[in-house]
Image (cartoon, rainbow over all chains, first blue to last red; front, side):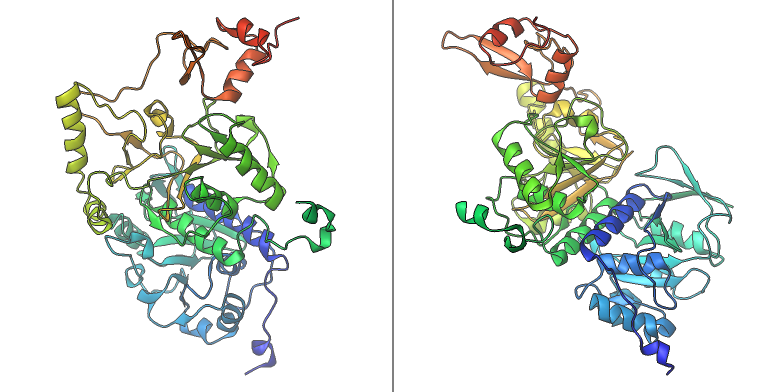
Length: 201
Length: 308
């Protein structure tokens, strides 16, 4: 193992206020789906995590929230970084995760592999952070649902073929389902289970 | 008290910003995000002991403490008024623990914590309403067991609630529930809007503001995102109606606000005044005058801005 892999980078320099600011951006992202929100460049993320992914997990994850990462990240610096800063367990079974980080272009795991909650406790579902190549410039997807006045269009890039069909399938489970955060750089875009995909082309 | 005052700033009791510790805030924040993703569903959370009794707004305080930051301006109202005991003590709590900027003006606030009212002034995008909720479960009076109400929500079995409203109509000719009137959120969950008068229910429908609900004693958090359908339950032949009054506010003359009835003597005298104190003051400052403003002003109960 190279020397750099064992070096764990810094987390928040001001945990109270940086996590508060990041949380408000996340709250805005999920209460107004499709709106890209800025989480700020507060930290240098470990290799394999977007800045927004790292900030989101620092803000929300702790010893109560198992995290699923792709095996390459789990066994690399990203896994060590999350274990150290969040104290979170890294799990191999996607269905056990409270938070998950996936690469939008990879074909596995499918969204259906994560925990969608159960009918009496739909809140126990996984929040999936989808790292994608960009939040604009891709195919246009039209959204509708709570948090959106009328309709809103988004155009993220770098998502696997069939991704939007999976999101539609997830929305059809409502009130069950996973909640998605599309992340790129320092930006995050919320797609909670309540959001309906009107049109993807 | 004097002990605290004599201690210098560096050695003051070391509470975290906004009183709650960071682990608690993370737990509440996770519950809030799930609540926003499932509008109207009650998310269980680990409600903490707060330095005031349960039932005095501990749920709302915990939600506010978890979301607020140095950029926020806080308004706290109790029954519409900024100057009642509960509102004053909660506002002072956040001034002391979070150095919060506070206001009485609805349009200046970024966070409005409320007990039993929604302000009369229309809410704006970007504002967050935080409701203090005594009983988050709208079905509790009909079914005392949590295990049962949880299943009723899971399977959207809300027939019992419709039967209750129907029996009201059968016995009294109308639905007699005047506050905490049940609503259907996003066409899926029946939700308690907290004990706001049903007058305020229509303000929740498609509101541009984010609405968060905290029930401290009952350990539940729920939410209504902006632009979300919030429909008061009713029947086709008995549509939902809000309260109305035969006279306008006695101080500001408003005919479209929620009025409190105030007994003023032991001869049966009474007056009706706006429950939203800031709304009433703003209208008086704009020159609106109600029938009893001169009398109230003469007794130094209110200030009459128009008086020379």
